[in-house]
Image: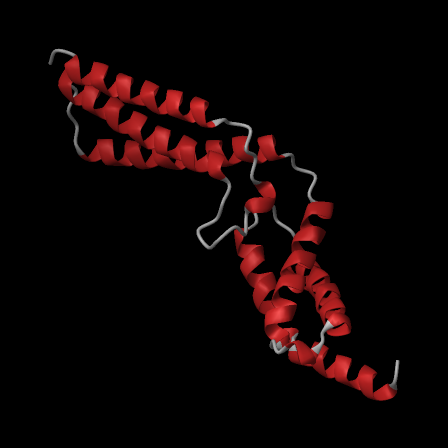
Length: 182
């Protein structure tokens, strides 16, 4: 490798530092396990160096576009090597955390209105069931709001028929609660 090519690679790496820090920050916020931000930056640096090495300016694309996928992939590869939590265990943890938050919110809402009629309690059961159904389904998805950043942790073990059956079960439960006498 010539000195000029090495200097060009070093310039690309220097110019790509903001990209590495940006992606590391974004991924750090979205991953379920706590991994040190500096570790994510280090993995991103590896991806950036590989991108600088393999970049061909004659292809007509910008370096940042080329490097984005290398850096992001390198960070996720590093996370997958560091993570010891299984997908099922992560989903269970996420479900319990979200369910506890939903139940706490429902308890705070129900304290503001102190009714103890059977009709009120049936309505409360329906509301709690709705919230927990949503929590369960959202905890099973594993995908983040911004694309597929959490796709590393996604587990597609639930088949479509199982999901449909579960939705029908929730719907039936709501119909039964609605038919209860006051």
